[in-house]
Length: 339
Image (tube, rainbow, N blue to C red; front, side):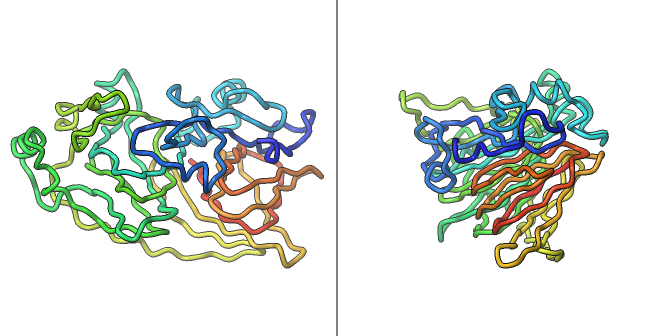
């Protein structure tokens, strides 16, 4: 991480941005692209996921620049809840979790509960709705999104028991730059050959329905959660998801398009290109919410108060609410997330 640690001096204002280091996950379906494409220096094989911005105890991210360097993000936000902003969704805790996911193999067919079910049955946890932004996809890549037709609880249970559920699952061809919103209750799976950025509620609740009878490195099959999955799954037929119309809004040195706005978060894609001009792209958070900048391509520099923070493809930057005025320079693409 040495090359990424350029940052503001430790005696500067607390509202400066800082870099995060992710936690990694070595799920059996993962590959090597998070290391190869995003320079993730995590000693796991395979490296299936990196939890880039997370305060979840199952995979907290850590600050690696500035005055909070070495601390967990959860510790920093506990000490400085004002960093989260005044929006009701941000009161007291980080409500989102941001990941990179490399699916070398198919993920299990799964479903997540909504907030109400999780609150009652999972010790007050949040449910999990999520957004996928496809960073790359193999030519034949697909994902599972709900069912082709309505299916009864009894038929679904029998198909899971007999291993025939795949014939009911709606499979969607996927390509780079696609966007999908997966509402809690939607049965889904990421297919082999897909590299995505995921923005979700801060939850790790996954009910695994079907896992192709795979075994892990120790020869064991992974646990299924059939009863809970049946309790929360939306069994109605789903329309094939259409890609939303996206409109670029241009400003000096940058362009921004809205990807997703839901009750849990807002996600935009921002393109920065100031290499050939003296202009810089202005950036600043207000008191309402923090923002997270996930660099999905390119590199550049974030300036503020005569200090700088260099960023590279794969980096994740946390910008506290009510930040100092900032300027972006370089050629890069971000996912910009707020609540």
